[in-house]
Length: 333
Image (cartoon, rainbow, N blue to C red; front, side):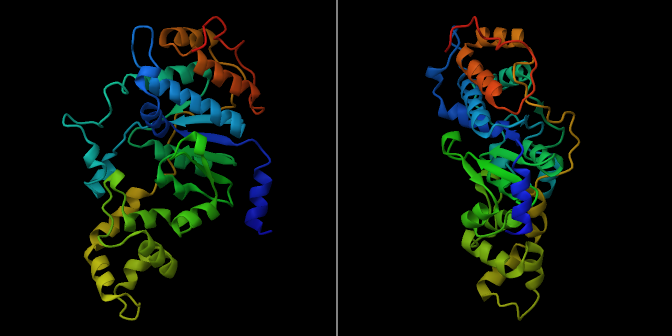
């Protein structure tokens, strides 16, 4: 067994930190749960809240963490990224400014935050940064093991066997969660996790307004990085007549020099963001059971709240706070 594998085996004996990309989950919940199936008694849709809480309950039950934290976007399109690459998420800007968010989703996000607070699960963001950057900071500085939960491909760059960081990829939903280590990243993309940002810069990512190098797809990007090591070495090799580039490929890369000079910085997550809160021990009972009960009644969330509380109580990694589930008197939904 290699030293890296030995370290990973050692750290994974402990319960993990579950670091959740909240926007990734609540967007998936919104589109995955019909509004007609999740409404309050007054007809207000709570499909994103219900789906988010059910995913949270499933994750806690299956992964048995001793710490849970949810990362939020305090700035979904940071100015410093846009200054480097104006096309970054430009297609997702609403005509009046801000992010395009469905009208019936936007009011549900504060409800998610209120329920998390009542449960005792920190909801954390940072001014000028995305949830990805919060997760990058947690993955870099929090005690391992760390399991990052997201459907965002950019976060494959955080996987680190030696440190004990994995990505629980939920691109196809929590039910089809992919538990990704470095071998899984290489099998999926043909590059190591540490090279994923360079790979994405070369290949492009339309979902983020990242154009990539025209004519360079995933296979070519992986081959270039495998041969040269990283994107900086690829660009440097363009000036070497002996580097072995096909003429057409050399021309495409040379034409994209300006883009390649900034794109990796845009794709790489920040890892030293100042956070106002850090993961705390997962409580075995709600931090504020009375508030949780009130929220469950107001938003018709008794069933999802109960499932999260039961998962917390059974996780085996938490510390007891609060008294009771806080949803005993509410009919399950």
